[in-house]
Length: 378
Image (cartoon, rainbow, N blue to C red; front, side, top):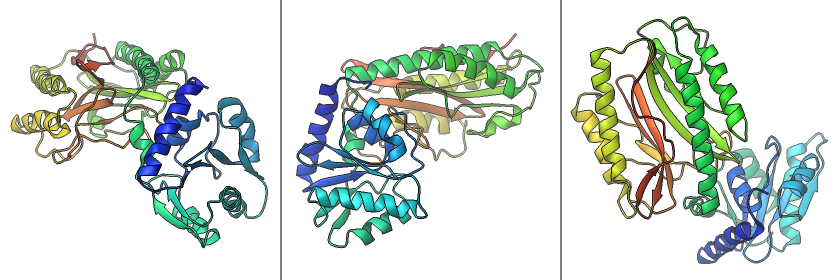
């Protein structure tokens, strides 16, 4: 397990306290991050049905296919499993029946069951089958209890994020150093991924490297396009340590930047620096958002600004690449708290700059430490 048992126990205790507030006798969870957060479960594939039953009192129980039981036994403190076979002409039906049996054996098949219906892995098909096999239960949407607990990181979680940030800094340095006329985006990616694989505890994922006109594709993949002198090059990279992600954006030029490019980059970075400086405990997220969004619009760097200026970051598993719990937008009502971690983003005029930022008792701390500048290759 990546954390000591007492930390997992504390997470479970807080979850069960929240369940009592919402009068939920049991949760049936499907989101991989939340299952990992409560149990430590790792090294599994979510291609087949996998769920965690969390009672208000007592220990959780896995509903898991037989091929994944060894992972549960070796990576998790939770040892109780209701197992279903991998073979069969109706594997989904078999797995949902296993969930029904587990809930019935625990005495929860006839009451309120909280479902994480925001999960990618609770498909409409699975939800309908659960409803069918649990006719006497009341299936309700749980209020993202575990998701919200994950917002405030423990010291050990922050240590993981620091390691992830060091990794992504290292990967970005290698990528920036590899820029030269004639190199392809794919060759840049080879250099970056090689360094990230060395520096991270997990295979790097979800990185974007684009150049030239393709820098407008914010989530574009690397291609065989070759860099030409004067091209902008855009990087959005991830460092991953024990499931915790740090993220970093930088923009570079092939050869010297133009005076206009330097001025635009300096303006974007200055605006974002001022917004990040406001990130203190108790400050409304909308205030931080306004400090980034409005000056960029006022400077004419964008005609419209509809995307987020930041979002919460931490424990992530594909297809998620962020926590998707807290966003920096104009009308949000939440405030910053110590222990929260965010990816703060400023994108304008074909350039992107970002940082992974921790909120401490004393203010914001940049976990990513690479120089904040428009990089120019030789």
